[in-house]
Image 1 (cartoon, rainbow, N blue to C red):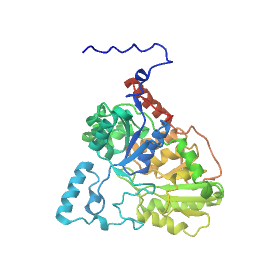
Image 2: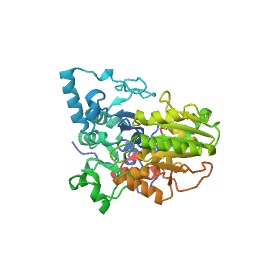
Image 3: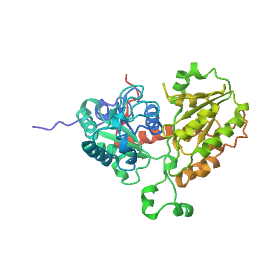
Image 4: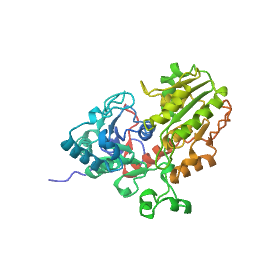
Amino acid sequence: MRPIRLPEPPNGSFGVPEIFDGRIYGVIRRAIVIGNGFPGAENQCLGLVRALGLSGRHSLYRVMRPRGGTNTWLHWLPVSVHKKLDSFFKQIFGDSSRKVEGKNGMPLMTKKTGLSDILEADAKQIAKEARETFDMDGPLLVIASGRDTISVASSIKRFAPENVFVVQIQHPRSRLDRFDLVITPRHDYYPLTPHARQQIPWLLRRWITPREPPGKNVADFAALRTAASAWHNELASLPKPLLVVNIGGPSSNCRYGVDLAKQLASMLQNVLWSCGSVRISFSRRTPEKVSKILVEEFKTHPKVYIWDGEGPNPHLGHLAWADAFVITADSVSMLSEACSTGKPVYVIGSDRCTWKFADFQKSLAERGVVRPFTGKEDISESWSYSSLNDTAEAANRINLALAARGWRILTSTK
């Protein structure tokens, strides 16, 4: 049989046949987001999806850690080991996790998100789908964020290397060649200064500190424009200025308890005179002993609204409509998202942070992006800074990496 000789591709950019334009095998029409259940991490992925023009053409999967019972103490383990131990304990002691309830009486095992059911991430199944649909639909873009997603995303790449393009947000610490592109937020890169060396045992340093300089990726304005419209009726009419208070939870690198909660309550009382309205939100990491102090302090105050965790999460609405923020220093994601708005951001508890968290706080303060919350502020006063909106740059990095591989993203479905 005589081989068929294909025509040479034309030199110009016009009139390129489909086979040379990459419209058959080199065009990405869909994406998969792999999350870990934490809004801060998943919002970074979804922001990238929007920036890449793939909104409405993506699916959300999650790496589901077992919850309830002894699982509370196993979160330091790799998720695969955690699941095996959970299965082992269930065989011996039975499944008691369904009886464990969260703060609002909702089972902790639920997979409902308020929007739709979220599929559990299965690397082999996703890779199989990518291979089987490649000829018809082209490559699959996979965007993942968070420690628990690393093994799943890298496995997808290993199972279907010719059919997927895998982007990992947040530094995986080792073996970067497992991914097509790694996008690391600024706080993921922590140089080991002499002070840092005193805080971190030398055996752990290679796992904690990436050796490459970081890229950047934070919340984007497309989400805020949508949220501004969605939350207009509830938030637009509130008396101004609107102060949003976001409270995370203590961690091993940013320790605090009821002492900080009492301090925050006192400081908020001191600035209420300058606020038109205040909205307080707690994260799922917030200890009940911390939230209880603030609830008791402000539950009857006419200016203050406290979100109780029921109904749609107002987080993006708050980002869109707030005039200023007070945020606890433990949450890098909440700080990054607030700083992406260009509005005043006050931080409380930064003096309690260590290593990369302290470095992140210092970098924001030096850039004039955040200020310490003292309780002496006039919330009606403002200041300006260059907002931390780097999602567009991250999207550009992805497009360049795809182009180097001969692929591109189809931004129009026409």
